[in-house]
Image (cartoon, rainbow, N blue to C red; front, side, top):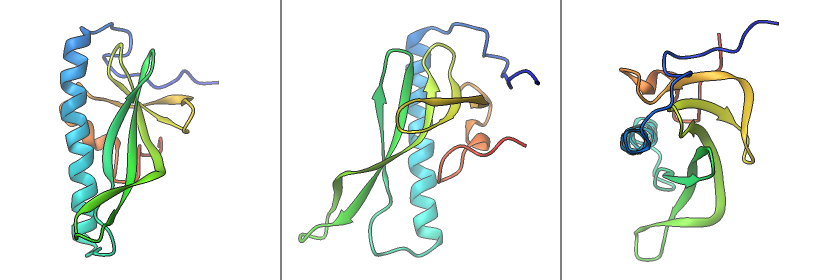
Length: 130
């Protein structure tokens, strides 16, 4: 069996403040991907999904929340209608694919400290390994 994929940052423990700062930038990148996807496809039935973060002991869960247009014409969040976009390891910034409960153990997809962290994700989640 081959060794799991790693990034140059995988074996390092980063400063938590640096990880949080890069995570904030990463979340804004994911939100922009969602907004661009809806605009590119001309979706008007609902606003783009809202991206938020849920923090655990070791991982940050990046969550896509479905939204709808309320009676006032404003974007509102569907309560309970959400899915996982990806996970981020809060020790080193690795981007991981996962289910709702936890990241899966099949390799690292990228890192938030990379020059372009968006190359390992798309609007649906992390990209598959090649």
